[in-house]
Image (cartoon, rainbow, N blue to C red; front, side, top):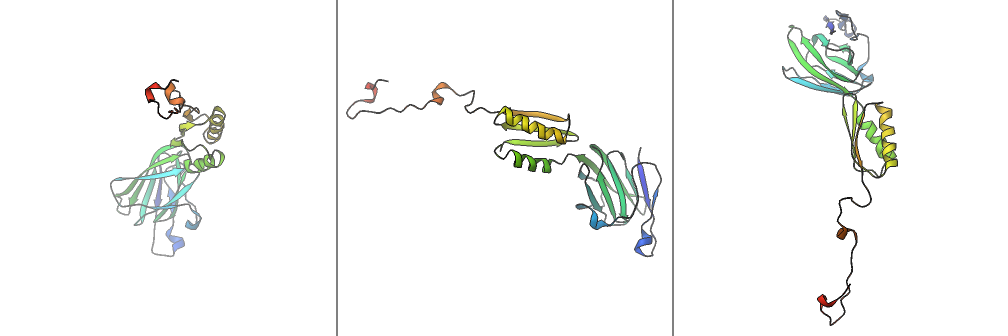
Length: 213
C-alpha cells in the first residue's frame, strides 16, 4: 500500500505554509517538528534519475528539496516513515529492514525526484563495538544486506569466534551469516621444510658438501 502526502502552500506566515493531508492510509504522517532535532541531511536533486537514500534502522535523515513539493509518496510504509517539515524538507526514518521508493512531485504535478530507500543495520556502530571488544582481531569484516549481517575474514580462536557471533546476534538475531575462518598459529598448508629453520655451522677449512647433519 502506498502512502501519499499532499503539501498545500500559501503566501502567508511559515506556520500556515505547512499543511499535510493524508490521502491514503499508511505510515506517512504529518506533524510539527523542528529540523534542528533531525539527523543528518541530504540534498535532493531535481532529476529523473533515481537517487539513493541509505538509512539505518531506527534513525532518520532530513531530505532537502531545491523547490517546494506538492506531494510525496512512500511505496512501502513498513520500511520507512516520512514526515513533512516544510514544503522543502522531509524527515525520513528507517522503520523496517529492506528497500522502498520515495517519490516527490513538484507544483506542476511532475515527478521532481525519486529515491531508492535502503534501510539496513548500523554496521558502523557494530564495527566500533567489535574494535573495542576484540581489538586484536584486525582481519574481521562486517557487511549488511537488508536484515542480514555477514561476518568474514579470519579470527584467532574458537573462543573469539563465539564472542564475535554473540555480539553479532545481539544486533541481528538469527540473521547472522558466518564466513569467518579460524587461523592457526602455523598455517595448515605449510611444508615441513618451512616449519623448522636449520642452522649449519661450517668448520673453517672444510668444504660445505663435507658437513654431515
